[in-house]
Amino acid sequence: MVVEWPRRFYSSALSVRAVRSSTRRAALAVCAALLLVTAGCSGGTNPASTDTPTTSTDSTATSSPTSSTSTTTTTTTGTWSPNASVDQYPPGVAANGTLANVTTLLDAHFDATANQPVELTVEWSAPNQSFVRTYTHGPDRTPYYSTYTDRAAEERVTQEFYGTDERDYFRVTLPDTSVTRVLQNVTVGSATWTRESVSSPRDSLEYFLDRGNYSVNGTVDRGGQTFIQLSADNGTSGFGESYAAYDGRALVTPDGVVHDVDESFGTGTNGSVDERYEGAVNVDTDVEWTGPPSWVADTPQLSVSVVEGGRAVEIRNTGGAALAGNATFEVEANDEPVQSGTPRSLIRGAVSGTVTTDEPLAPGEAVYVTADADGTASSFALHDDPTTGEYTFGAAGVRSNHENVFYRLQTGFETPWNDDEES
Image 1 (tube, rainbow, N blue to C red):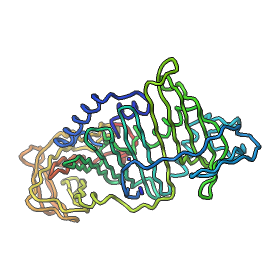
Image 2: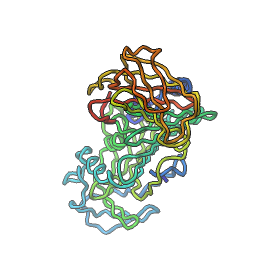
Image 3: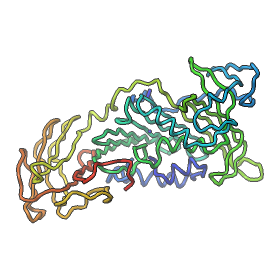
């Protein structure tokens, strides 16, 4: 087996502010239209399916975390025992058994799973919202693969994201079409999990754990491993909501790896439940990373760089499929590298021009863009072989829309590109 909804929707759902169906239908329609026209609304093991997996819950018998009774409860997902010693408590759990510091627990979790294959799955169900999100990486944090499937939309929409250190690939599949984006050094305003801090796997775990008053409630033995069980029977007020009938459970290893979080609760006033919500997070550390999804291999994997001592811009097909002929590229450039902190949605150049290929560009092949010293649009030219022009490129950005694949590629930064930076 092997997952950014615009933050105003995603955080609202996880903060338990219901998004009304009319708003979601309008947002979906706008997003789909933008994707189909401009691809501007963008965004392990390969998943066997993006369908919602079945979630099961262990018994959560009430007991003091320091109970010395020998009572156990066996379920299909493990054997629960009320006995849990303080030296088993995960990071962030205080000596009295309460989860006192969620940040400390999350630090331990992501430190422990940074260099091993892992898949994190989030399921969410609200009155007008239902989705499944997955995030998977191999022995290192990159490359990684994520998916987002919207189950509340009138038409099923699946978003996939494959990120490497060099490029990002984003694909949206609608019932009758699909759109792919290839990005280099471009921050993704997408609906899938990325390396950015906004709407990340860490945020998802934090939302779940922050919502309940979790404390130790025994241990669960499952598959030869012992987990500390954290339970919550009341919701916190951190999200400004009125919780009713809150029920939460988390399974965490003593070293802080969170494997399961399940919660169910309602919101309302005067003790009544007006709307009900259910969510689950599952972390699987027993996965096999098999590389990118198959559609990445079917996509021309273009990259851009400044070559010939700055006198040319190289557009290279580094792999995947061949780029069909007659592809048009918009090129913008500066004669100096881009300074740190410059907005990076696309380089806004002092000069710009348009070039078009004559022949297909096969994997391993490249074309080269040059311009005259004054950088006039008419002077931009495309060459099959490395060629030195008169204009000196310090930074360059390239855009193209060809056969339903959209490219935004840029190069020429004084400091290395870092997706963790917010632009």
